[in-house]
Amino acid sequence: MARSPNLSLMPLELTQQVTLLGLRIRGARQARRLRLEDIADKTGLSRKTVEAVERGEPSTSLGAYVAVLGCMSLTQELDLIADPGLDREGLALRFSVAEKRVRRPQKVDNDF
Image (cartoon, rainbow, N blue to C red; front, side):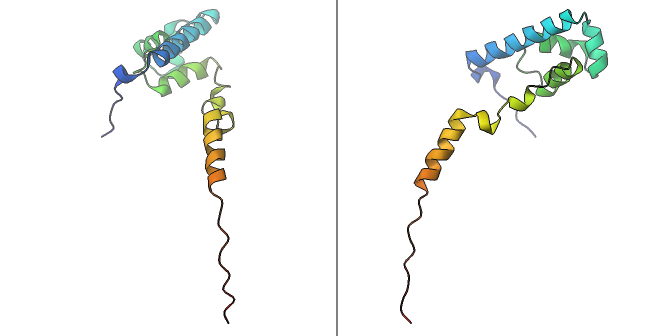
């Protein structure tokens, strides 16, 4: 059985980012003059789940966020999330590890 994340351990900065995401999603819905029910119908989610997305609740599934964004055609930047080419820390670590992996020349056995 899958374990649920302990959301109380989530850093405040991440909680704030999810809250801001929810507010941006709400703003996008309102700019499109869509009702919560319209989004719920288009995504197959319940109205309560759409409300949770707009509140930026971290316990709401990523799939719900993506479904809501998708029905408003706002998923074009999802490919940038965790893109290895944009991950500065990951790239730095890969390069530092590659530098440490210098191979020693192998002994040549000239004994015939």
